[in-house]
Image (cartoon, rainbow, N blue to C red; front, side, top):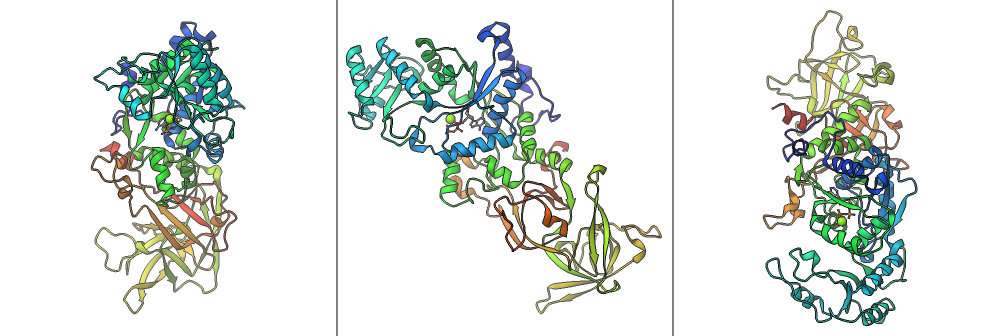
Length: 578
Ligand code: ATP
Ligand code: MG
């Protein structure tokens, strides 16, 4: 087991196995042991249990891939269960988005969609059973007093003065809590375990509270709600879950999880197994922080392409396969660590490099006129759609006397190593001709407005007749047929690797990268790009991977909007070859 865990990447990702092959993780090993021991009639049944109080993020993707993946490996099942026990923070919008995201990621719960709220009646009956067995009591201590009685890590707690209430009195009070006779927060039902327990979670934890809040499914039927620790494990048991996989912060809750299961006549005894949650550099993952970014208008909704939410990653152009591959590569560990976001970006590059068709687009256009090219002529040149995939075929791109090239592919006073356009220099236009920059036009401020060039008609297709070489190949777009577009360049939302730590006392919102979104409104695309459908990623040659913005349907008359997923530069590969 130790060796397997050593494979798991730390923050710097050293030792990360990037073959993308599936590998045995320690959870698989534990399930194997259970199967060998003949537990659970040799069944494996997992669940993904989101609380519908926000949108799913890449951390949830890790949990989804793990839970659905284990079910697949062991030929079992995985349920989608909404842990909706906290009505004040939950909404139907979140339920719908969660389902959409799990489906998009490529997983199917085959109709096994459940809600903890569907078990409210059963959970209530379980609570009554605990009371009858002398294992739960109604407590009237105020929240402050409850805290004080609870003790500390060093000091044992004290028994509540209500702890020895009779079963009959407890049954009566609990029924009246349900009937709405008492004010919110005035009483709770607590498990009777051990106020001196070393594990604070075992010091008579609250299992029901009074809360008058409208629930997105049960409406106003209840004014008492079960606490998470009580509802979660018992919901697992009710569903016949065999392995309840959760993140490390629940390790200390496991004795309580087991305690409820042991006390009650449940149909199944699930085993809780913890793993390290995913932390990703240059972003935040806590729902509280994501909600703040959304509510304060610091981002453009839950699906802002800079957020680590699955809807944001989708809008940004991350493919489901790239996210699944990423989750596979980071593996599953027992120790918390930070994963470099460059690895996620590497995963999407790798996938899009394989599947994205290539096109030409100019983001910061500079007009270029070929003075010796016939006026009014437009010719169609052949361009391959994918250099490594002949099956992707080719397309025609129009070429004309007036073109656009990228402004930063030209320098009037070029340093030695600059091989692109400068007066007197010859370069290749991709799929087209050799051109030479002859002279430039400038505006009153001295800014270059037009490049005047000549072309070599013998170099059609991009190679010269006499074997003459050039050092640069530029992308371009023909002016008469160019499609105007808006392109949004996204970068990491935060300028610091661990913005959520707040160690320095500053709020994470102060660490937002002010350059994380650059909107370019005057971009020029080759005509074929106007036809790219929603959800289809493309490569703009030399610039990166882009996708039509999925909020722009139907396309506005101002032309298409493209989001940049990532540039072509792979920082992760670079860091690996150092
Ligand atoms: P909170 O408890 O603050 O609402 P949460 O992130 O735990 O947030 P849940 O909806 O409870 O949200 O999470 C659903 C499942 O996803 C849980 O099993 C949880 O352990 C898992 N999960 C959540 N965040 C991560 C993460 N960063 N890495 C891996 N798994 C995660
Ligand atoms: Mg949670």
